[in-house]
Image (cartoon, rainbow, N blue to C red; front, side, top):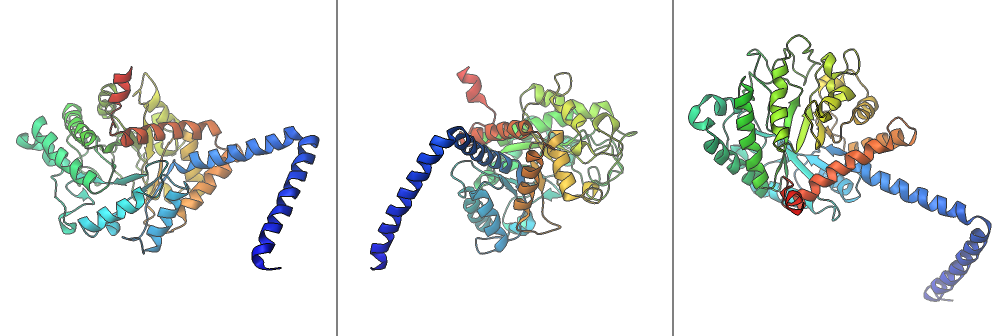
Length: 399
């Protein structure tokens, strides 16, 4: 018998066997089979939801680099839901457009978040060196009246947002809404990342930043909640204790922007203050108290996506294992975990993170409802980006 005649015969036998097994099983334990099928479907659904809570950085610039190939596969299979770009991923405007197109087309079900830090000044990943525009720092925007006027600020950030959109980027990790309360602060004030110490000015310029990005269909991330501008330490290196330096005024930009419906995402910083912590020296980024203040009607009243600061920063990396960081953050209410992957450069990092979360949900350390809530908020924002409506105006119109 030839190979071509063997295959149909085997298929017939297999089909008959499966039919017989199905008849026996359906007669013996139909409810058991239904339960197993339902469990498998539930597990698949859980895995899909978990993937959307993960954003990672990666090595490489094009489709031939192992790091790029790895994250593209992870996006395609739903293991992760987004990527963060860093200088090593960007060499030219053309190369960047090709890279983001490759990643954006990986998954036909949900558009991936493709994010970058493009604040202006010292913190911008798209630079003159790579064929992009240089934008002034937030401090310059706040200090110079001509630049700081609303119309001027809007036009400048409109150009920034359009450049990001043209590059295939749909999330900007900005604006910084920290108040510059400590002039010796090395991470905010010394790097000119704050619009100033006046919450009114900070809110006005942040509003211009956000609305300009929304017009270009780019989501924004206000940072670093509850406020990094009064700190003495740099969370990239250590855990800043802001217990004595922090002021209530640092929440005002978040309250105003939330009331105006202008917050797409809020990034929680690796900062310690008893008001925003679940325990001694536990960072806000790993504490439910911080997220509670963000969510509460008598707090910020924020309903959007809560994002972690980079989970590889020294403030958390040196004090908590990878598993502890992931489980504590998600359980506390962080919707989207960000890992720069700069330290480890691990192409399988997304797979490891997914496995940690899945295991924690299945053994009860993270409630499934926590994943479902995060997934719902993330998918809603992605839906708005897909419909070119990041502000949700179409929803309001429909009502």
